[in-house]
Length: 414
Image 1 (cartoon, rainbow, N blue to C red):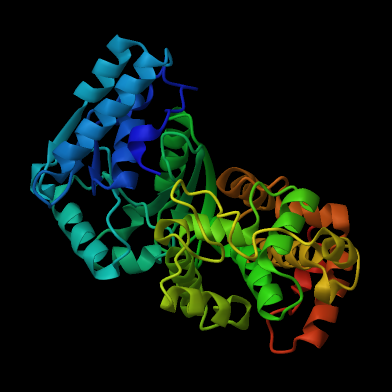
Image 2 (cartoon, helix red, strand yellow):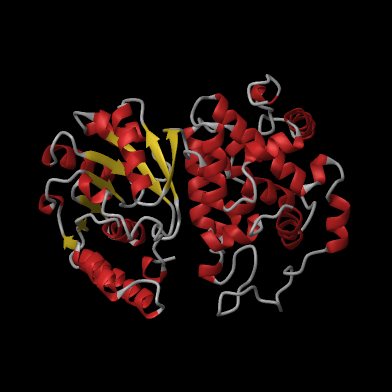
């Protein structure tokens, strides 16, 4: 979803130039995320310099932002004067050298560690020592990015969600060397921008991309094992679980290649932990070029308008089968399996001290639109019940994927 079709979060914008006291903001990378972040910062009152090394890219991004703001004016959601003021605060540039001294610089380039390291080394050399240097990475280790920075205590993650002008969640990610003062400064600034910040340590996938892995993985394994077809699994998770989209249709929407890349990154960063092993089901889709909506076929086949092709086989759920599976044995119940794994993942993350229970629940509700946070779900189901379900799954499918977190039964979250 590109920034030129988004509506900004107006919660703090009318009174808001309190955030501008932080000083100018730099954004490096003028793709969808970088342009969206620039729009958010400018809407909060900051002078923003948007940098992209590809000639003309930053200027084109500013034009897209202008078109988006014009449409909001046409819809009566933004005054013409406010739209003009926001756009005038954004200056395109083609190199980091052109950045003024900033209070904050946010890097939003592709997920390439070497590229990010080079950018941060240059930013550290050119920006004042009190400038906060942030990365919008969704999964790369913050300490790895800060490796070439002489003062890594000012390097942190500000992981916005797409599209940034609409999505309220921001993961504020601290590395091992990030100073508390910079984290709190960033949290205060995100609040001033009308966002909902959650704190997280630099763990693989942070909160959302780590905890969400089982949502996709369990569905793929259930289809792979022949327990149920994709449409039935998606129907169960939507209609019985309250999720806005089923996991298989969601991976088609995201892009099977993109979803596989994130999952593989988490698997590699966790030392190839069995919990995150990519499925042959998804790997085969990607190898076959069945990437989802963008390629016309993924788990499902798609018509030209992006809707599921009703004439294609496998698009209708088997409701009789769904009725038998839900509430049956845990090994064949798509909903119970998925919830147990989501709860387990969240509990483990909290037990490791990587985020608080409240921040995990907030992140999953806002970042993925889950109907409940996984810790809340665990309390509702019963952490002891989840532990027994996982023990049963671990026996049925040995290897470590379903090992229960000790925190499920140690009383720390009750």
